[in-house]
Amino acid sequence: MGIVRAVSGLSIMPEDVMTQSGMDSLTGVELKHRLERVYGINLPTSAAFEYPTVSALATFVHSKCEQR
Image 1 (cartoon, rainbow, N blue to C red):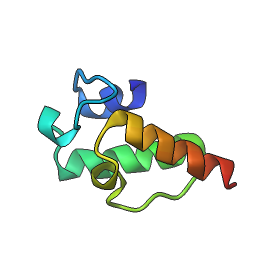
Image 2: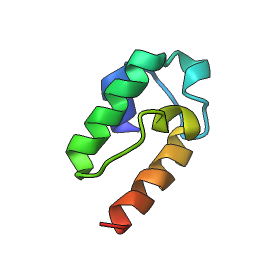
Image 3: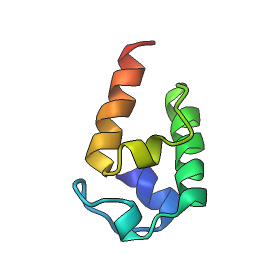
Image 4: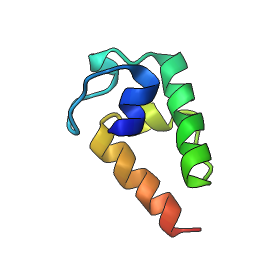
């Protein structure tokens, strides 16, 4: 949640839908880029929308990290 908060400025809980909490497409792309830099992985541009909660996105990012 820390990266999501840092990028978006949103106060969000793990099961909150990020777009319903105020995240827009620009913030989604910024979040994607930050996650890629921090974890050294490649994510689809639409990752923040395909995995709409912090929990779902974290699970996806974790699976990508395990594939490295």
